[in-house]
Amino acid sequence: MAHYRVGRLEQEIQREVNDILLKRVRDPRVQGVTLTGVEVTGDLQQATIYYSILSDDKKDEETTAKGLAKATGLIRGELGSRLSIYKTPEIKFELDTSVQYGDKIDRLINKLKREEQ
Image (cartoon, rainbow, N blue to C red; front, side, top):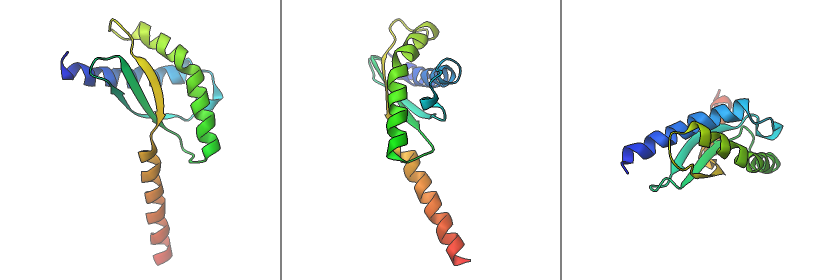
């Protein structure tokens, strides 16, 4: 099980799930989701898919999480037919808070710049 395969699989999963979310998932709750990365365990059994949304409102976060949870079965089924591996990993979605954090920092810096002028 070469490490190279894990990395390639992670990229493949991210690309395919992006496509599935765009074309196959009709749930409005998952519109505007940006996938930020995928982490696959060494045994290829589990894939964590990190995503971000533009809002940092807790209610929006919950709504999106529910939408993704509901779509997980469909997404995994689609992945199964698209990926060239024997067993499709279990997938779970996790909100990537580092993106929001970076976004917040950017906004603060811009605010400070504006106040200086």
